Length: 257
Ligand SMILES: Cc1cc2nc3c(=O)[nH]c(=O)nc-3n(C[C@H](O)[C@H](O)[C@H](O)COP(=O)(O)OP(=O)(O)OC[C@H]3O[C@@H](n4cnc5c(N)ncnc54)[C@H](O)[C@@H]3O)c2cc1C
Ligand code: FES
Image (cartoon, rainbow, N blue to C red; front, side, top):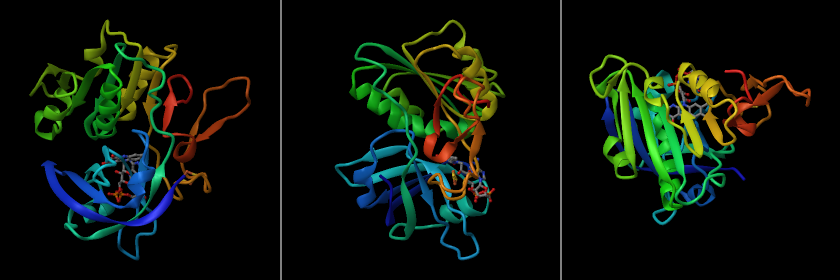
């Protein structure tokens, strides 16, 4: 169930150029269950009507807080980056299906693949898998070392392998280079569509491989059809999925990226 609330900003810090971590406090946290779910956040300006979808990076039920990590992209996220502790944000959530971790068991291995800001929802996912006793291997791609964040946090959970487009850190090239010969009991990925296409192709027939997709959204709750993506042809005759309420997490092979 999703609800709306004015959540209070507990802290905000810059992690890398244009990348911010914001911690929020509110009752809504009690409803946040699955990694990969997202919040629909109103920009507190009357001329900006559409909320901005941002994934949950951490959920802390004990403290009643959740954390988001966002990259300043346009006018809305720029506004968020100027907000201070004690300010509040009008938030609808938690939205979306989130990642299914029931498919992987204790002592099995999960590959967690992320690109750029797309690694953010994978942090809560990794924590949940590790808490379950699953061995996690993180494969992360960034444009350059300067924009990396949370490396230490992910390393505390399991192995981390990094690639950078400019070779400034880790393996030179895109994240696909880290994938060669690796297999796992479950695969989870989030990042740019180019990266997701590679993962989709490689793990098309894997029974437990999942992709978190992004789409432009309006309502965020399945009412307006602003966020549809094309479903792969099959016998059901259904041609589209709404990313906001039927996703944002889909199995590989389900949608056309
Ligand atoms: C399910 C989901 C989870 C996301 N999680 C994160 C996250 O954890 N961290 C993060 O930095 N970004 C995330 N994004 C992308 C984020 O929503 C956009 O970067 C943000 O909305 C841009 O808003 P803006 O006002 O700064 O940019 P503008 O370009 O000014 O936005 C104009 C409009 O386009 C929409 N828009 C622009 N880019 C995107 C995009 N990539 N995806 C969806 N809508 C977009 C905005 O919501 C807004 O309605 C997520 C997107 C989705 C769909
Ligand atoms: S954003 Fe309205 S249906 Fe998805």
